[in-house]
Length: 360
Image (tube, rainbow, N blue to C red; front, side):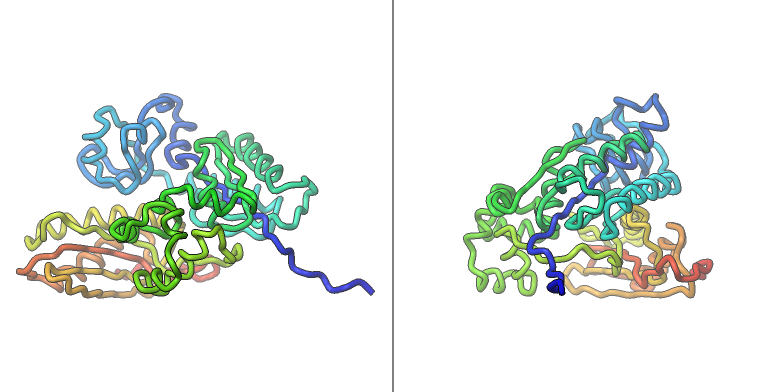
């Protein structure tokens, strides 16, 4: 009798990340855009950038950046409207390729995913060989390039995929994991956002090496329940599995203002920009939800949230913004001023749920 199968001692994880996905699709489909700085979304007058080509990124243009800021940085920037149906179609092509190599795929958005290839079902020999073949097939089938990180856990695989962009691959073995993490700035760590990065900087933590020098007690004191993740990450440790059924609980955006806003017109305009940034993320994740939540922080840092739900999924930005504006108007006037606005979509609707027209 054969002994029971034991789980593998070491995972093999690939993080695949498409290169400037939306912009690359536009440049693929319109040869006149190739080699030019391209921004998907927004316009020269208003809105936010949903994605930027590498030519635009060279000028400092980034996703979720206000269009006016992007134009200041790159006067020759070409704006094109987003075609999310096309992006979803390409994303489906890419996910079909993934399925040929593993059933353990965790999509993070339309353009990136984790793959657990510990079981080599095609007999290619190594995770690196699998990643190379996937990248080649993506290029052949879609005309687009993808970068990949190959490692023994999700945290390092995601860091590695960004290491040799665009159209590159980086392999980090278990022996190199801790040293690789400790050589990087903490602001590159997945899960360390701008606010946490600024807090770390105030504490003198700029790199993974600085982070690994801190005790668990110190991290718990300053970062609470997040401390365990940071403590392990700094040492190249991440036991999270690739989750096939991963679903975002909420998707949105928020903005802190340089000066407090109290004029209703200024607040409406600010919420419009926040909604633009949030909708970019909602579309990127392919998210559908029923609940819109407004976050409002007063000048004295008092923070409130207000939410409303529809009977069906919110399927367009106009309905999303309209609900947010209704929630905002109910909080006016705010004579002390507002320092932050946020807008999120939650009550996520899955693919198997019936999608009804929004009642907002």
